[in-house]
Length: 72
Ligand SMILES: [Zn+2]
Image 1 (cartoon, rainbow, N blue to C red):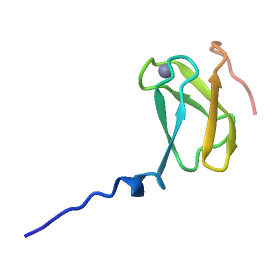
Image 2: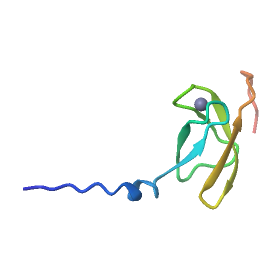
Image 3: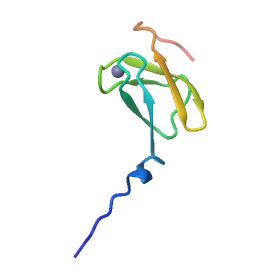
Image 4: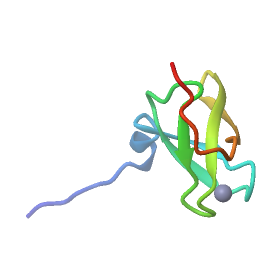
């Protein structure tokens, strides 16, 4: 008999969440997310960019709405 116990807190080590600046929904991020990385809000579909990461708190900002090559 197999019993699976899913520890919710364990997933927090893999994913972080940040608040969408447009719709305030939590946006799931991988724990290795980096500043200036662009992600899509799964709730409103907006493009948001990672503005800053402080310890486990990630701040998001609305990404510029331009379809342009940013260059590197
Ligand atoms: Zn959103």
